[in-house]
Length: 144
Image (cartoon, rainbow, N blue to C red; front, side):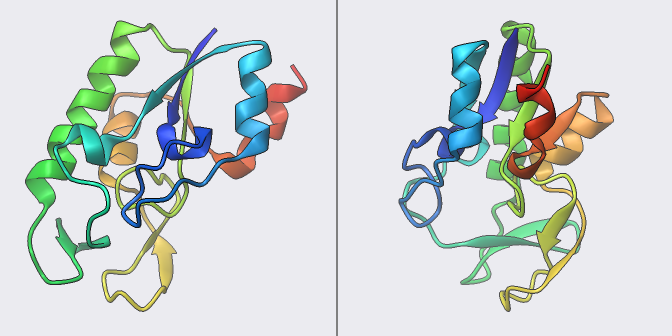
């Protein structure tokens, strides 16, 4: 099966800090499945590295206060197109990300405080009835 995966979880250095967050349990899925990497932030034209962003109200702002909602929205739309193009079964997106998360995000104060919420891509996928898992939820797939 095809699975859309946050590129940073596969070792691609595309995060805001120019690093990756390789997740061995996710990478192991390539033994049985086709993994389709995506970084919605880069797909939305943001550079790497870049200032960190958080969701503030209904906007995405970086640590300097610049509004990056347009870029995040564009990246989410492009990620959705990629998901559909490859007829993916579900996706695995980076937890706590203002783009990818589907459960917890930072509260917009840049104080590392987590709250319940979805990132821009996570929200778009949820609205399109797409199953999204975070990297900590992968064990169930490996046991299938």
